[in-house]
Length: 217
Picture 1 (cartoon, rainbow, N blue to C red):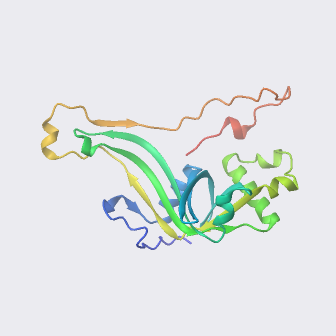
Picture 2: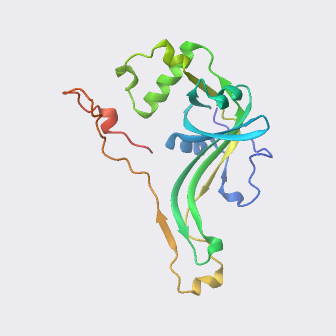
């Protein structure tokens, strides 16, 4: 499915409409570039937001956590909100009012569905690991049955949501451009460091390509 997401009362932008994007290419690109997400639930009338990792498979997004997690247990078949944000820069203007950030974000709404079938859950977890580190899963110790029992995988359709993107320079008021105040952008990027081997790594174990070449787009 490549059609854009339908704009709803929950997803339409009330202001700065030009920053809103509803096409799947934009939304998928942000989801694929940032695995860290936050998932919001309502439990007993109170809001909870849980940070976790997400991954996309086609037009569905998945996330995982402990089977003992109250939030995850209660979120099965419940309405949830999943967000992903990427900070690209601080935007310094000539007034405090017009300071901003260059950023990309996605907010999705949907019903969380638990992956019940153990075989399907194993496939999803394999896809999660290999999505970050291509080929790594098959090099690992096979999952124990208890590993799978201790892990819950939830997913939902990417059907209701939007992306919001800000790029570019400050948007000052016209008369403020005559002020002798520095304005501009401080770029921000996620930096991948040099891998640090485990202190108990066996002698002779070489650094695999999926670690050496790791990157986030």
